Amino acid sequence: MLSVVQLLPALNAGGVERSTLEIGAALVAAGHRSIVISAGGRLLPQLLAQGSEHIAVPVGQKSLATLRHIWTLKRLFAELKPDIVHARSRLPAWLAYCAMRGMHGLRPHFVTTVHGLNSPGRYSAIMTRGERVICVSDTVRDYVRKHYPQTDPARLSVIPRGIAPDEFPFAYQPSSAWREKFFAEFPQLAGAPLLTLSGRGTRLKGHHDAIELLADLKAQGINARLILLGAREPGRETYIAELEQLAAVRGVSEAIAITAPRADVRDVYAISALVLQLSNKPESFGRTVVEALSLGRPVLGYAHGGVGELLAELFPVGAVPLRDRVALLTRATELLRMPPSLSPLTKYRLADMQAATLRLYAELADEAVR
Image 1 (cartoon, rainbow, N blue to C red):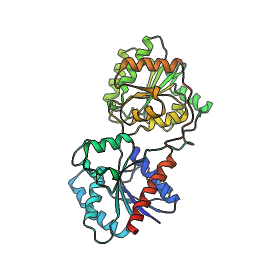
Image 2: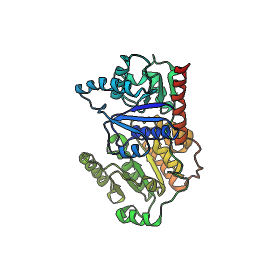
Image 3: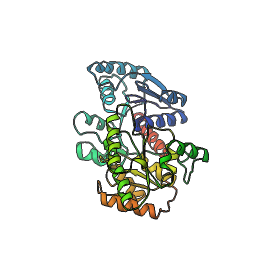
Image 4: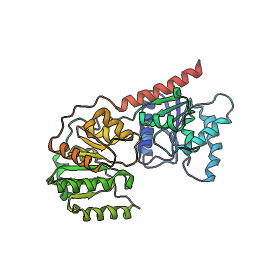
């Protein structure tokens, strides 16, 4: 039986948190011990329900006082005797690394996952110090090799994120009751093809580009609607007002909805004519692409980063050059007028990601035995 400790700042929403829960569940299902160290958060009940243990330590709090948790972790590692310590974020990785450096006797194996394209430098370099460094895409692996050339390529393992096909089943359609409720809430979205862009309320996600695309389609005589899913968040009021002002200036205010984060993302994707991924900063992976294509919905996105990597492999017609407004309009017009025929995905499955990660853990533990 393996004992694995995962460290991350907190258990709220996000790809890091989701991956932590997914690996925790896989460890428990395989009869191993799963322990998570974090400050806790809204996903903690789900983590515990899956059978993982949790130890509350604020390892992500950016303060000099946090350095005291080096000794906290040193004590915990000595008590828990984990086979693997897996750090998923920079500050927790530094704390764990420092804690293990002074350990006597058998030390745990140190694994890191590079989830994002962090600014290169000494602080971020800790994520390349693992005995194994998991990269969530080829884009991330190439980024690590470019900015940290001293990293031994043999320590880099590409394990893409994955989704559960039963959560995003091919050709899925929501119930008529859901549709009735959704369009009652957003009547302005009814009666025309729906474009969906899902993302936090930050300009990096390309909300402005989506609004401009909607206006350009209107100018071409193509009637469409747009939902900016999850952009309306506390503290983002100025940004949302900016988006609303742009929509008013471009004459598409009556064809847009800007929502808070929602739990029915799958249903919204399923009724969408196009799912947009217009982040102007390269993404490390691009889960939206896989989720939408798994449902059988076409994706239109910029050909850079992990999104470009996925589109090139899975749906090349959906990729356009970054910030090329003419190409974006042209491709959107083509995809709306002649919707493509898609096939079920056979890659990027959650089970594959879980199995590959557990194999990596087992290989490290086996090396220690030998």
